[in-house]
Length: 547
Image (cartoon, rainbow, N blue to C red; front, side, top):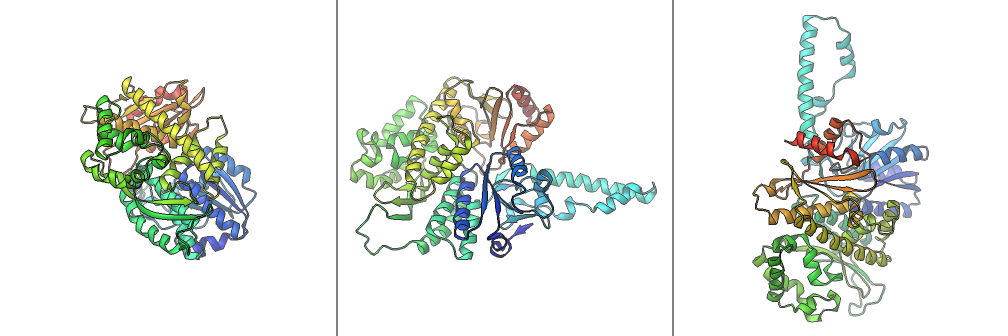
């Protein structure tokens, strides 16, 4: 059931108790977890933090820790599955779920005791009515035991009609996976009602929302609608400095302003940022020789010398650095780059270069997913979580350097895929598989980083393809993650205005068709990990299902 009064029916219930905290491997979940950690620390609430990568991980971890507590909090995991059926808990265990993955499982929605969903039901979910999908178990048993009469035949006919209707309703309800409101925003709103919010928690909520926007998990209007509310919170929570002309190394501030959707440009060179931003790379077609000429023409039009564009942004001439946003805004219309300008949030610590919320998103993805030294995935989780602390900007700087390597690797991979014609049309979808043994393939062993590569690859392919249907085709990407396993991920067509993904249902049916259980069912159902030798059969099953 949905819990709308989070203060009374959720937080006051768990405050001071021992909580098991299951957290998914995504940036919004990390931000939500950080908000809870801040709250639990202030209220001396004991918790056990358990990162979980997929359904199998959740089941295994719950069995390990289930005896420790009666209250379980799941962040961006568990909402789309029948949590009671999967985990088989004792009757006195209560699950609180805050999950941006949709659609929410109907058993969780209509559970009256053990499962409590934090926040309001979203209209976009179109949740079916209870009587359309559930039937009284007693009447079901009676109909099975009745002797065959005209009346029972009529009852059976009505029941069959009801089942057909139920199957149709459930198929329509579950055929697409999509994202709802960021969990970090839901919990920040709870803090506001508790009168416990602060500027740090607001910054974490902003990062959670920015993650959804950067990864194109929600429509742009959702970001636009949340923006004024966050700006009001910011103006309320920001502390005006009495000595605004004097700054010191410990100053901390968050501000909102018009900015550019150029990746990491304050911590990189302008030219490198333009080359590695999806919108500029695809609009300028930077994978071609003519694209290179367009890039240099753009730099000439804004009046930025090549030598300045190639050095770090912080080392540019102050006049050029201060006017850069206005210079870019003046020429966006000439190159169909209007989406490059948007309102963002900046965090400034002392005398350092400001961090845009998007900088944090890319840095945290890199810390979470890029294991250059073969570290365990859990180590990346803790590093990314720790980087949210205001005194841990060194970790964010490390993440930014990793993110640069990831973005350069993406550009290199996309160029290779295009040059070698490795993005293949399989009829109802496009697909590519990264070469086995490739040094770069290790960069994309997890869904988040592979999703970024896939969006770049699809954007580049559709911008260069002469096939008019290219923009209407979804893309499936595959990468070998170990000797015997591979990760498969699907993204919707580039022409899709509403980011709803049908691959979750398709992957589930394809796995059933070949009779193989996935190694990992990720909470984002558009990604799945299977045994590598089953990949050809899996792709054949997908092609059959989607034709």
